Length: 196
Image 1 (cartoon, rainbow, N blue to C red):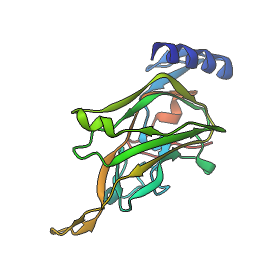
Image 2 (cartoon, rainbow, N blue to C red):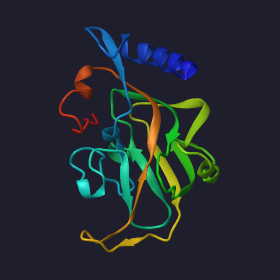
Image 3 (cartoon, one colour):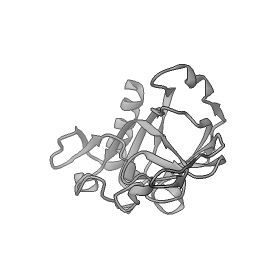
């Protein structure tokens, strides 16, 4: 993570002509925070902010899957699945803190770079599984990002008071997000992040 952090700090400083301010920034500095759900769309191409219905996860990493098979899991929130302008993300991996893990494989596309499939079934052996990359990836502002995966069926039908079909899964990016101006990450918790 340290190597990826140094790499992204150099790129932020060069691209934005500012110095790092980390969590508390002042004039002439850029900042760093956690990777926020509002920076992404979910598997249904809905922004993962407070405009997304609580019935499908709201402003969280939690998603309700209603179909099995190969599908988009996460994508950049901007048009054409891009990372928002003035945001850069140091992606070190993904956590899958699900009691029942239904995602069996993933693959990613970052800009024009396609990465091969990764099988996740070994994670069933661990209590709190995560996939950590050896070197990590830099998701640059205005760069496309798509995470695809296979969701193992069958999809359960719940017949209690709130009868619904689906299964819940958390897919949480591990790493940090860097912002050019603090205004990008201010506002109410769960609020949308502007893409331009």
